[in-house]
Length: 93
Image (cartoon, rainbow, N blue to C red; front, side, top):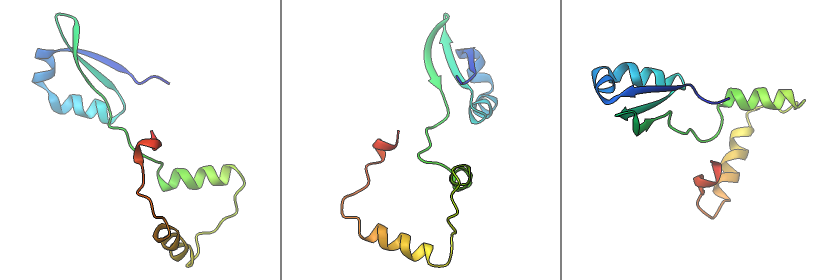
């Protein structure tokens, strides 16, 4: 689904930046124009990864029965310590 696109003149954008940021936080893309030509686009920041709640829902949807027990955190720390190369977050996009 494409984000909602909101077109504003420079003068409109200057008047109420708080309202613009609120629309962006709700997922809209704001296009600021001068003489009906785009000069800037304000869109929600890309967020890497998923929320934990989304991961749990996805796992449940795929029939996972994994349990986050007391040993899970220790296992995860061991995996992280064993990783030698730095993470390349650009691959997440």
